[in-house]
Length: 595
Image (tube, rainbow, N blue to C red; front, top):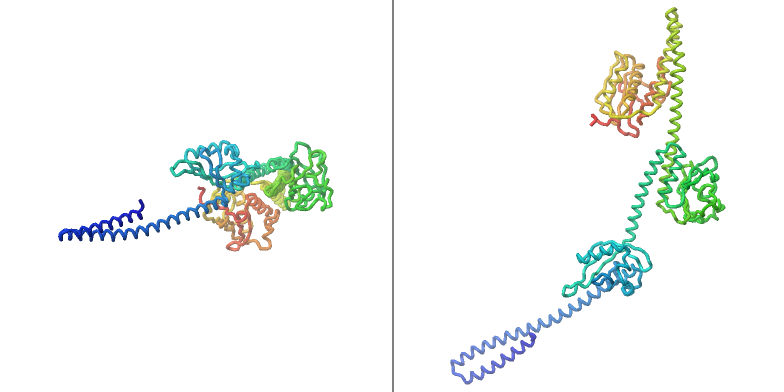
């Protein structure tokens, strides 16, 4: 019974009781009448309270009806909003059966992702989610086992196959659906297409791998001993680093590009030289940038016909005959800084991309650097061989007759007292000194030996001890350690000290001190005029009548062999000051101690 009906019945009962009381009052005694009046008042109170409750009941009923209508309206609006979101969501949304075998509902985004016109078409077409959607069976098993066990899954990644056979990557968030009794009825998932992100990660991983391969190839090239070895290592390494079918390298000789190496297992002698102004090879050689041709009929938007060149002359590598293998379609080449070119060939158009261009540009720089390095080392070896040959001539072919002459002059001086013999003896002594300095200079033309932390202050004292001068004074402060070839460094200081004594006299004072990025050696001698400072390191240059002019040249050789720099300026007291610093401002003194 509703509140409204109960209120009406209560009102009818109070009316009936009131009527009966009125009747009883008319027939009753005064005492009974008093009791009846009291009952009647109580009944009136109940009636009044009943009317109030009736009014409240009407109000509550009205509010309840309004609330019910509002709730139904809100539910309808929420349903419309959900349906709108379901239909328009960019994320793919679907529901499945409780067995996870079929889709029961799918929104347009999910249908479009799987290649269907609508969700209804998708649900009708997919008979088995495991077989028709999942690419990897093991991923479906993990998907199903996880949902069966935990009822939900987050950011689960797997590959799907579309209706057209395309493979895509998705990330899925799935929850359980239940009915009003809490029983599980199925699953609802939200899918995001992550194919682009996956492909970007794969490209990054591939690029990282290629960079690693490039560094390994660069080291391999740098370790080659000859130019021919460099060429072959380049083409073999590039064949594994880049896509395509073959790699070829040609060197420039005059107006022709001469084949030098090929990644194909064949001799380059079958290739004819190509003029530097012919074909794509010539274009690559003359270009300052990497040249990529996605198709031989197009080159950066310019057709072969527009270049006024015979298409047959635009072969992938110098002189390769087109009737021996498939015609090349895609090319990628880089000039070797005027030394030649490296060119990659593919029989499929569009085989190379922008990243391949960047890698080839870096590789070409490594190649040219290695070529220059190898040539410099070859020239250095030749120079060393000439110096060794020269030192042998000086040490044996000149010194032997010199020793004979010195001995005969000594014998003659014992028999005769002649100023001419004295002059001859002095001249022979000077020749001997020159020979010693020349031999020393030839030795310093070689690289320094193994370097190690050397206590500079101790090295300075040892060098000073070997210089015979009782009146000369050495001053040096705490100098710390330096990484150097100690024996060569001692020779450097010996020559600087000897130079100071020769020009400053037996009482000269020599100071060795620290610089922010190295050290200095200065004396109290006459100093070196500014216009002569550029010449003091030249071989044979000297202002001392008894000097050979090789001492400071030897100093410069030792300094440069350590990759240091030396400059000359004025000392504190006007003498000569030699400052030795690291190349490019790199500090030389490494610490106060060797820890």
